[in-house]
Image (cartoon, rainbow, N blue to C red; front, top):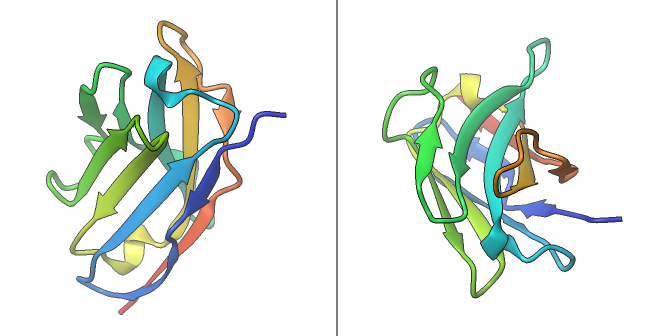
Length: 119
């Protein structure tokens, strides 16, 4: 079974930074579009950011521009989500997802990493 493994979550104070990482030993990231989603208690799963296999990134319109940056290092088979100026409302489980280039759905998901922002 394909596994994506997220890391880097934890407890951070408001306005602090945090960087999440996602890697896989089964997928070759260079041919996949990669994305981050998050799920906060009582809320729907929310798209955060996506970076396609060419490196073009897109972000949720619901998030303040510039606070989240997605990047990838195909040599390390790793995708990152750099977060700055975190707020308590950013508290959620953050999930990494992958889809083959050209596919419409993200079929591969990690188990998530908890991010908790204290006020």
